Amino acid sequence: MERTKTIAASLVAAAVMTVAACGTSQPTSTQSATATTGTEPAYAATLEPLIDRLMKDNAIPGAVVLITSPDQGDWSATFGTTTIDENKPMSMDDHFRIGSNTKTMTSTVILQLVQEGRLSLDDPVSKYRPGVPNGDKITIAQLSDMHSGLYSYTFDPQFNATLDRDPDKVWTPDELLAIAFSHPVNFPPGEKFDYSNTNIILLGVIIEQLTGRSAAEAFAQRIFEPLGLEHTSLPAPADSSIPEPHPQGYSFGTNVSTIDTYALPADEQAAAVAGTLKPNNETNANPSWAWTAGGAISTVADMATYVKALVGGGLLDEQTQKIRLDSIQPTDPANPTAAGYGLGIARFGPLIGHDGQIPGFMTFMGMDPNTDLRIVIGTNLATVPSGEGSALTLLKGILPVFYGAGSVPAGNPAAVPGATGGASPTTTPVGGATATTGAGG
Image 1 (tube, rainbow, N blue to C red):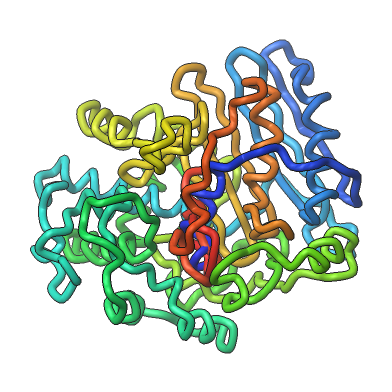
Image 2 (cartoon, rainbow, N blue to C red):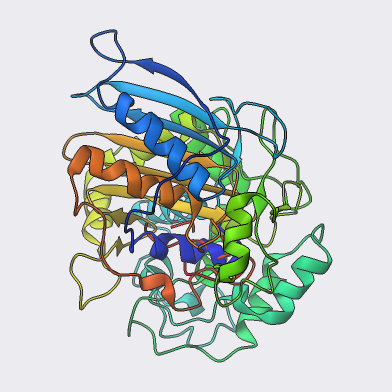
């Protein structure tokens, strides 16, 4: 997730992707590279200084990058530090809160249940959950592809104020849905794309209802165990810990101050980049508010394995996998080059996957279905001072190295609040989990 708002925001934010200015900074890199030839891939010499500069110019403390390419070789590297003002190198084994990347897992289980005949994508939400505004008109598919029109609880001011005041609070799905349903719907179902964490919380509730298991158990049985993801989990609501090793996670601003934008005021942006304005440490903030919309934890290696199955197949039958990939549509219908979103899956230029932003962390996972190139990024900063998701800032610099200028999606569907909610939005395809504002997801 991506702070509550962050969840939605990051996905959408990724759509903008104009390469940020580069600079120099404290982060240093440590590579661990292997290629088909047994030597470091040629692209590594370009990426290493590029990532170093982007991190310095955007106040990103630490990052882990993993790239696999059947044609150009595999490469992984760590950059910067786990802890601001301390020399503690990042590790390839580091665990991250992965925010809205969790949404892909929720929708994967929903699609598996569709395969099993236990529900239909055309079923109205009211069939499974009473009391949902427009529930007799909103379909399961519209929850998954963000066309429900339901207000995202992560934009609620009081919700964000509570996150700031009581970061240890354990939230229940019913509490989150009650907040969402206390607001009018944004528009009639199906009218347009609008990233809402409320949609995915509803899908989580439906998963538990139909499987008779907790969402965490369903994820483990249906995704983590079959793929051998030993370092991936959806923690229990009361568990705010992160498995070791892990970096400290940072965010600029508060949940309330980021409801409308993650961008700091101009003078604060300069201070943040200079290092005189420090971000908040959000490492141990309880992520139960994000739950099935952004609460999972993983490593870059597990995410690389997962995104291969997500995009290339292995979790769904061939027909359902095709339905999922075909569901991806531009988030801005007027701009066919904009980032795309579908049934819990996003398209960022040539890559398909998702991103996730939550207070303290941001991750991205993507795979090119034509070449099998995979790019996975984990950082310990939610958004950079200018307001963009940190992992997306790095991705925007990396993509042109493989695809040339113009490989970055156009448009910014996440510019309008709502993507993921105040507590740090989750970005929308590049996920998260994301519109720009709020909690993240």
